[in-house]
Image 1 (cartoon, rainbow, N blue to C red):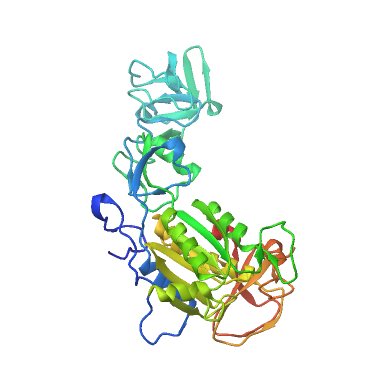
Image 2 (cartoon, rainbow, N blue to C red):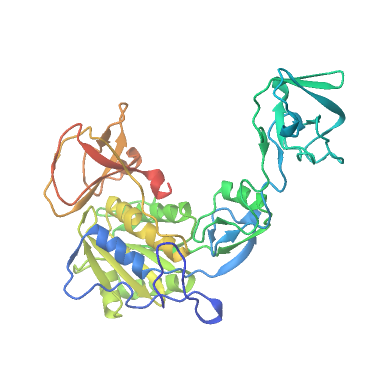
Length: 435
């Protein structure tokens, strides 16, 4: 198997033209690595993940949100012929003599969109044209109707109009054969307009990535179910299923498995049978009740990444029966942050998309914070009325209300510093994560 590059190209196909499966050791860290900086973890994910979804051709009306399996080229010029950008009059610029006003003979008839003029406009003459009309033969310039006067078969206009004014040149947008959409792009409505204008009725896309979601823990109960002492409603599963759907994947609900290794093994088997990737929450560290990591370790496929971030830290990565497994933290805020920062780009890469990381912008802080160096931090944040970054009242990973309160994440780098109000900080809105 060949690790894919950041542009989504150069991926080897497996037998029968199908994409290759992930290696069992694709998430392995080099010997001796313990704490992994966030940037290094992301780069290792980029190297490990390759597209696993086969290509197919679909009609434009079914292509929205799909990921292109190969570059798309135009089947025709756009526009196919030079046409008028305005309602006005077309003529040959060489017919102008520098007089004030310029006068041209106005021919009978007109050219309209979809109804071209059949004849040729001779030198010294002009023809009425409407917006979108093919420029008549013999013409290379259009004057706007507001800048001309037509009366008695004569067209008058002021001097100084430039050659080629008010017309759209043939192929000025793109030419037949030109690459118009890159491989790995997730198709938006405007991309469908571009493909249609290029004369395409179908597009080569990859089938949607299938993502299964599994919660684990004896303490969890379905949302709305009665709770006994010590029990909690499962907040992670609806959150992760929602994220998977928002990112354009087919979400599969594996339910909530108890802290029982046979039950967990059966759930992972079910996930691998129907999905390309599995998101789990809870049980992914190294404690007595961390059964997910224990099962994966017993199968020889576990790689426990201790990523230097907050919230999060332990990130279990593995393959199970050919499916990629992302073992996320159990606390909802940590699971959400790790899903956005690590799982999203990796899953999109598996789906065939280009490797892209969210873009943030530097904005003044509306808060004060003293930090120790060594870990990258992600704070739930939003912008106040003055455009400054304010953060949630607590950094506790179990306070789910902060996720709905926030409009994005405030990313604080590993070097550590004392942040004072007004200092620049990096704010990444949730829209950058496809939300």
